[in-house]
Amino acid sequence: MVRVFYISDDLDDLELVEYELELSGITAPQIHVLSDKDAEVASHHHLHPVKSFMRNDVVHSMEIGAVIGFITAALVLFFAYVSGVTETVGWLPFVMLSIVMLGFITWEGGLFGFQELHYQFRRFKHVLKSGRHVLMVDVEPEQELTLANVTLAHDKLKPAGTGKSPPRWLVSLHNRWDKTMYTLP
Image (cartoon, rainbow, N blue to C red; front, side, top):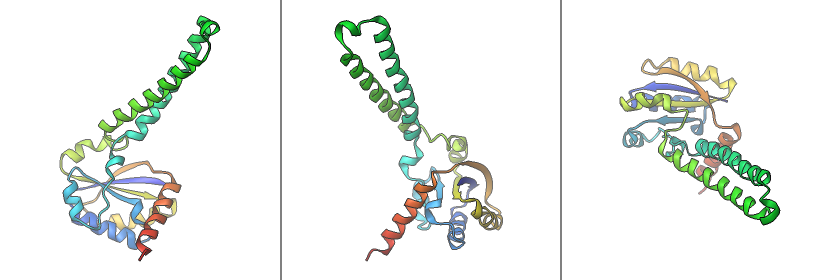
């Protein structure tokens, strides 16, 4: 899958685009609108805003924190071994310290990520500040022509590049969840 970005300043047009995409076979979990004007997006019932936890860089920052934490934990164990202190005190304090360091640094990475815009959305910071909106569509290769046909009919929609899409299994799981929720009595 690939994520395709478009910029627009007209939420009514974005709502129409999303409606046409869904009629063409692209599912709602594949389409999202990123905007600093959440209240306006919420007033358009057919638009699907980016969830607040996905706007932030929590997951990505936690992954970076985990890598740094793992390196730090390995260094603690390495220096404990090289210094020879493990022969007198044993390995347990250093293994525990390594585990605590890994957990703490990973946690700190997540806290840092709460403050940051998602790494894929940072390039749109100026667009969002200017009051415009970003349409994101996650498409399979066979859906790219459908996406192009729908978006070409909308002059207010400007292409803004591509990016990394969420894993296919996650979008598929979201599709199944939506179908289950809408078919319950």
